[in-house]
Length: 306
Image 1 (tube, rainbow, N blue to C red):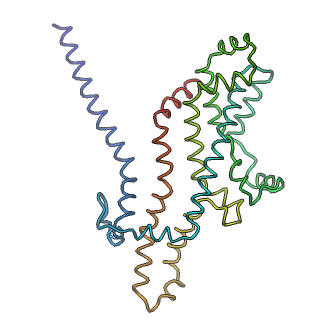
Image 2 (cartoon, rainbow, N blue to C red):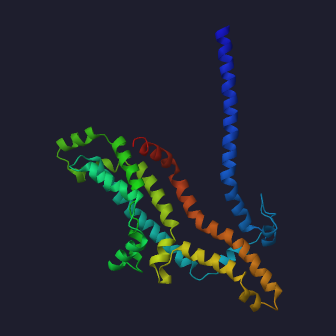
Image 3 (cartoon, one colour):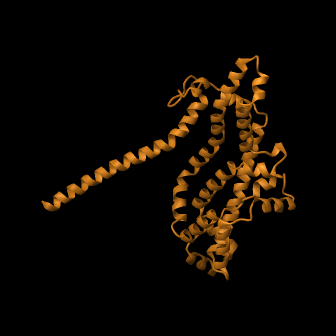
């Protein structure tokens, strides 16, 4: 009876823990999802309701005013195409180089520890923006499409995750068996490692894709031709134009006799900020949803060993 009583108390403890755990994760989920939901609600609500703080759970009224203000920008569509091109081509190059470098770091060679140490040091220390800018300008990459594709091509963190994944998922004995059959590193990499690395390739594609899609700073530093600007830079200009123009003295003096134009511009600026966030976030959310089934497994396997 005593043993049975202990089992009942333990089961009750587990139930209490499960309920507390469930409540905790529900709170975390709400804390993560509510800001995203609020942005979507605000982007399609009446600007007056947004300004008065009424659009909190559901859209109040329905208005495309913010999206109309954003999509009126002439370069929005072309910048969207630029961002897609930079993201797809840049991520493809980054994933390819990262996988080849990760495979090389899993092989035995002279000076391997020194190479690993050198790579890890670059994760914490860099030459700085000005030396990097001068080097890229000397190489003729300034104001070119190529700089948007190849800059920051390899992340050391992603490289370490990929190296750990290959070490864990592809045993060294498999390479030794392939070597007996005459396979060299190229055959082993393309015919054995890559087919077994679909999960980590998907994870790297998400990491690099999101980073390149959200990158606006590179364009600010290196791109002067407006036809080559990515979406994030254009959206930044849209927000800055709408918010600044409605707050400076020139704006009010220009519309001194037109109070309706002033209020309409302020209303559009309020919701346009939320619309910009939605426009720039949708592709990354879609990419994550497509890769989600690979993402957790790849990250866990890639981070098991140091």
